[in-house]
Structure formats: C-alpha cells, structure tokens
Amino acid sequence: MLYSGKFLMLGTLALSVLLTAASTRAADPLANIRYLVGNWSCVSKSAEGAENSKASFRTTFAPNVLAYAFEAPDYSATGYLGYDSKTHRYFDVYSDLFGGTARETAVATSGAQLTFAGMGQYDAKPFAVRETITHIGAKMEDRSEMQTRKTWTLQADSTCSRSPAKM
Image (cartoon, rainbow, N blue to C red; front, top):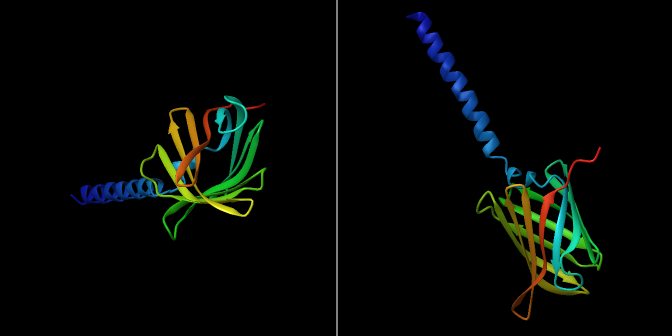
C-alpha cells in the first residue's frame, strides 16, 4: 500500500502542475490579441477616398505589446496594442499620416471581439473614437468610427486575411 500512496501523490502533483500551467495560459491577457501578429492583406472601405481599396496590416510582437502599421492608398497609421494589468484594460494608441492621434481602451467581452473607445485629436480638435476588432476564423475585421456633433461616422471598415509567409 505504500506504493499506491506515492502514485496517488505523484498523480495529484502532476495534475496540479497541469492545472497551474493551463490557468497561466488562460490568464494571459495578450492571448486575445496575439493572433494579430503577422502580415495581413485587407480590403478597406473608407469614409473618404477609395472604396474597397487594398490595404495591408503588419503586426509584430514586442514585450507586452503589439506594434502595428496599417497602410492603404489614402491612409496610413502606426500604433501599439497591449494590456494594462493595473487597470485590467486593453489599450490602443496610434497616430496617422494626417497628424491625428488617438488613445483607446477596451475590456475583453468575448474572445472574438474587442471594442475600444477613447479620444482622438486632429488639428487641435478633440473627438470621440471607437474601434471594433473581430477575429473570425482565419480573418479579422477592423471597424473604426469617430463621433462629431453626437453622431458616429464610419472612418474605415476593413476585412483582412492572413498573407502568405514570404520566403
């Protein structure tokens, strides 16, 4: 009976290690956005300019943040996505080629979608901004809006697919 107790204790210890590893993975807040790392090809509709224009979205992983660049014929932006463990919120900060900037935060509501809300500024004028990023299988949708005079206006609606790896 001495051996069965050791096996029981060893089995309990192994199960404890597995459960701890699983809970650590589940507690990784960047898991909700890590799928964005890589190169994406997008079809983007903008409020101004070309309809259904081709765009690219490139994301790299740096410690605790994702750095990204979005490029379309009539627009480009660079920024960072990450997670603030003190506020338990995701953040998105970016600037665009027109000199606009924005800071947004989001609380994860589901594994497939994050909706950011915050404030932007262009030409020294502040405005509310909202962005929804949705993960749908091998695709990603990104919808950006801004609020002026209490009305939300679409700025860009992009559907992106992962680009093939370059050799």
